[in-house]
Length: 394
Image 1: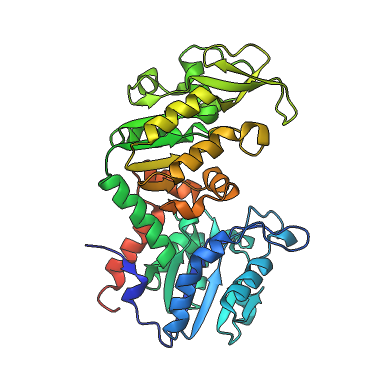
Image 2 (image 1 turned 90 degrees about the horizontal axis):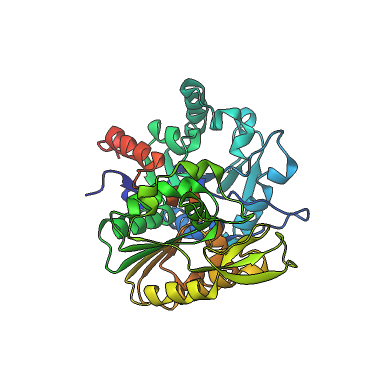
């Protein structure tokens, strides 16, 4: 039994609805968005609110890490794209705190992080901003899975003043990951790559659930360095050097057999393929090698559940994209539950046009990683408190 509200639990007719979205998408110099995937993922929720005759939909998001209300971090471009996709005018508002809101059906507020209260660590100040936001509406909807791991005013505090619920996109991401981790079909294999050592807590949690964890990217080189092997000039996350050998030597963890190494961090670099323990000084590993790709593909072929978080090489460079592309294609063709963590993993899947062949390509790298670690998202905890507070009056 759920202990938070879903969007279908509410009657929206004649209600003002404050909708937190995860449109953290910057525009280029021409005002064109780099991607509209996150906007597309929210359309079902917006259409539901429109179909159920919400009086007004007040949309809010953050974009980037503004320091001085930079023009390129304004929400104009995302508001415009939302309008185009919904085929309905969206009014962008800069100073709602002073002038109030217009009567438009959909209103888009300025970048939330232009107000220091959004990320304020002082709870009293943060709640003051949250209360101002809550005063605009009758109901709150969280359609920002990508930011649900943050304790920010618009994520965890607004729903303490008005009833809050999950939008369709956020609930789908949360339930898919939760259900997969709770009752995975076996064999359950995970692929963990990328650069940062912050994935180690996810690995530790997945060791209790997955049958095997295949490691790639710079993370694999970090593990090899800790084991005492030379990694040449390969850069690793130095903060991860404290990881215990006990974790790395777990029999479920599978490390690469070979690497593609280069003499510089460049698509024009000289390259060669070497065994995993034979990386010479002055060279850096930028992709896993063909033996490893074949080995990982063979293991994946029988999987019934796959969680993939982090690219296996520097996929942004064509010369070092083979492993990420080939493994991505292999996963896409397997009949299994296939969850791709957000961030660089999602970017790689999108680059190679594989997103429609996955069960879930998460919109949130940090949020999905927190769930892979076995932790509850702060935004979900907040919605549970909101449910307890408002369940008798909704």
